[in-house]
Image (cartoon, rainbow, N blue to C red; front, side):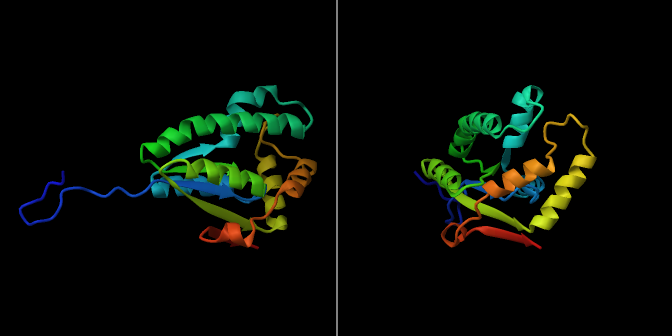
Length: 181
């Protein structure tokens, strides 16, 4: 039952629908920095697959980049991220999912997961030129220790870049698009 104040207005507050902010972009686009700022601005809980990957598997990383090893562990991290993110959304709190989402299939899968909750999803696409991204990755590597699990070699950058599928026009409808050339 609604209660009313003396002036006839309702005392019930409408809560905004929680949002799952899906961060998408190729390697070196600045996804994590953007996700941190977005989470602070929207008062959302941020989930970073890189952070989970390093915390859970960083010490076990093979010396040479192994795509299969990495993808299998990313999938495990994403499963656990969803175990926490889903009840967070259902409790009415927005989340920022800093997952990279390099393929249309992955973006579709995450949108479908969110559609099964009370939340809405919003894609944030960081469209940054290859030249800028490569320079960022190389600069970031210089500031890291040689055994840093997040260091990305030029070869790894090229392999990851080749895997990235830019979102289609349909996917970008209603999305936040940030361009940097």
